[in-house]
Image (cartoon, rainbow, N blue to C red; front, side, top):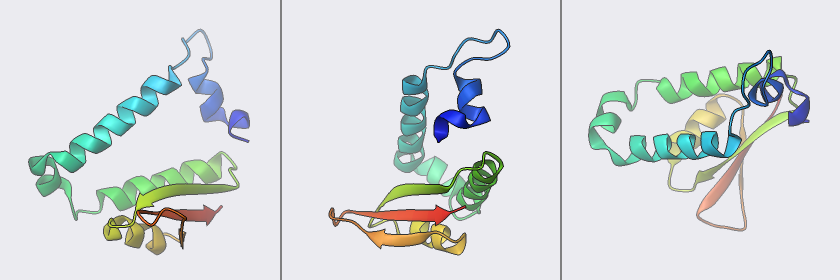
Length: 108
């Protein structure tokens, strides 16, 4: 399904643009997430201001525009704030075999 979306096609290269290195993009996103979590000054400045909620809302809009069937995520069980944000936006939270992780899913 993902291969049929406009975003995926754009990342693969269109109109003379070079394709995006998807592995590098994923690694960059992971590193950015770790930076936000690990750096207190970033956490203190941006936490509890609705940034995560707005980013997730935008992700849902893009998913709907791309006609995705669903969006899912794995969240650390201890991350109650992210679980609440997901629930607020309509995700269903489910336990997994790994007690340290829950799965959030929304049908679009």
